Image (cartoon, rainbow, N blue to C red; front, side, top):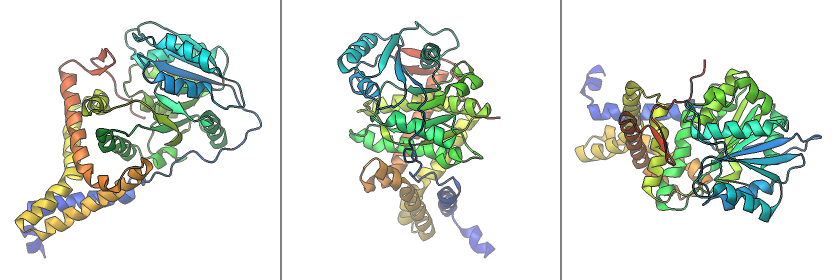
Amino acid sequence: MWGRLRRMSALVWIALASLVVWLWLLLGQGFFWRTDQRLPPRAELEHWPDVAVVVPARDEAEVLPSSLPSLLAQDYPGRASVFLVDDGSSDGTGELARRLAERHGGLALTVVSPGEPEAGWTGKLWALRAGIALARADGPEYLLLTDADIVHRPDSLRALVAAARGGGFDLVSQMARLRVASGWERLIVPAFVYFFAQLYPFRWINARRARATAAAGGCVLLRTEAAERAGIPRAVRQAVIDDVSVARAVRRSGGRVWLGLADRVDSVRPYPRLGDLWRMVSRSAYAQLRHNPLVLLGTVAGLALVYLAPPVTFFAGLATGSPGAAWAGGLAWLVMAGTYLPMLRYYRQRPVLALTLPFTALLYLLMTLDSAVQHYRGRGAAWKGRTYTRPEAAPEQP
């Protein structure tokens, strides 16, 4: 037996290693591939608390006509108001917001422009600081932090508040359903959410004894008291990956966090070209690795073993007459594709795209390497005309 094991080729060993990893991911990574973490059925409350909706917006005139009216039209039984923070826009975002409010009516809208961020703040968190400070003057029990490209169904706010109250959560976040229209979006966007869920399994986040912590920045309902206790946003003012940072700050201060996939919340931001998606991913990929070259090397090696090795060993095994490599590599590829199918169904995409996941993972690997290159060139995380040369990643949990 040992002689047979010694005679096994490196190709077979790589294929078997990848298969073992995929079997572990299938069963031991919080069932990350399932898409059943959704808001519970809406419950009616005896008293609906006051809510302030804070929307940071920088050059969002393209998407605001779709998103802002959906917030103003929220069917919420309690008192709610919207605060849009015009973060130095050059396309008339603030004035457009006022015109949309006049045209559509609904919830009261306040538009504020806080000016350029102070040193040590990222633009979005500086905008959130201004919006939260203004909103707190009305004493709301909850803050809904939502991006300017997010469209909410009329009952979205009601469902979020009911879930927070019913589950005793200090933070309830939904991963908005991103736009999937172009060919590149079909190839990359569902995989983006799939990889996020693999890194932060929603079941682990939502468990009473949590093993992971994260949020999705497009839609975060946050108890005001929990925000104050966690020091948000000042405690995370330099974070580029602000949603995960906010969730960790809430958890560290003793709060409960819930994250799931959205049924009532959609992003309308278009990423029609590969370059658009590339910039979206690469601007923060290396920050997530805490700008650590060793972690980068480990990530590249891990992505190669987990996502690239199955198809490579499968075809190489067929070409070289190595049935062991072909069998193990092919089975690993099938397990990988099977775990991707639920996310493709959630995004209403063709099942055959599951077989393209290795190619998509290769693109993400290249985006991550590009993120590191840009960082060492001093360009850091660039977004909408601002560059953060030494941005921070999400701080670690204690």
